[in-house]
Amino acid sequence: MATVSDRPKDRPRAATERSQTVGRPVEGRKGRTRMQRKIRAKRPAKKAGADVTKIPPEQWDMPVSFAQDGSMVSLREFIHPTVPVLSLSQLSPEQRAELTVKRIELQPRFELGMIGAGIVDKSRAIAEVKSQSKVGRLLTEIEQRVINNLVTDAARKP
Image (cartoon, rainbow, N blue to C red; front, top):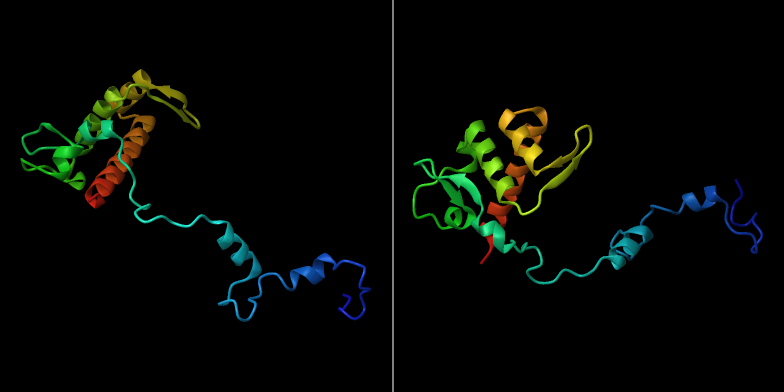
């Protein structure tokens, strides 16, 4: 490998010479590499309150859990309960499936592409969830994650 003194000034550095400098921190820059400084410079600055996700208005009235009497509870009722509600971890697999079916039915449009299952439209999704097939169980799991995120975001909202 050529050293700096062996290399003519008009010839660019070889790839092996360049790789020796990449990744090493430059003194006086808080230990960041050039690449880390470049990436940091390209990121937009965070705005105050930007970490709070805006919940779409239609989601506030969609069911997210059940009351102890068995009736479905909307996100609004879950956050400010007037009756005792079941937490998400207290729901049985049948209740989770029922909740998923109801939420899919309430969607104005529902179409999802899945590897191995193809395009799943609203009627097929409802049939898959009711039959508790592999696709139906995946749809139920996805919907539970959505519900969990909605509840978490709604609880953080001022």
